[in-house]
Image (cartoon, rainbow, N blue to C red; front, side, top):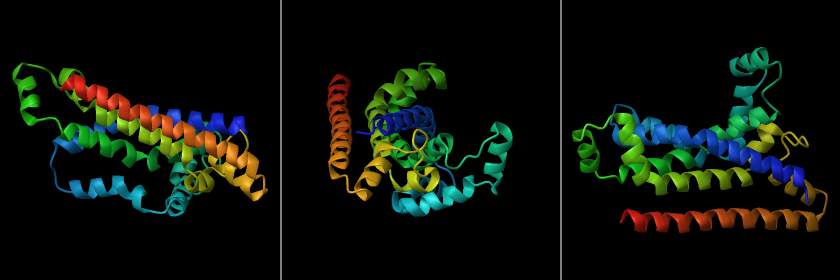
Length: 222
């Protein structure tokens, strides 16, 4: 078992969820409540990682983060290190690639809130911020929880983006998915099976807990 790779994967997945939680809430709520020209294009751009092969998406991110790109040059000047083949670059790529897994379930959660509930909150004099905290978030919580778990589980198992943007640097970018691939390439099937089983167990437990919490929250709200 490559515990370093597992810890790096858990750290990457956890940080991805932490960053995507406020981003997903803001984007999901905006898309759920607002109609504007080009909304379909925005939703399509957010959903793009779902249909593009990870290696293709990873290639574009590699070019966008590279030393010759404005983003890569800015990062090098600001932090004194490259963005590609580092944990920071891997985290940024993970956030971008997981956007649809975070935004879409949250958007559906906010869309499920009846308009009259939000209108009643406004009539009661609630500010937009208080309405978000007291009305929107509690009612959209199942969608938010689903988004968090999907983003976490998807990050744990992601391979193509990690390989393209991060490579396989031990302790830096070598996640458990890359470690499994390396073990298979080395014909170490026992180690690959052990890590695969643990990854499967973690993902299955996360999804099962999501369903359990969603049902419990649904009964309370009902």
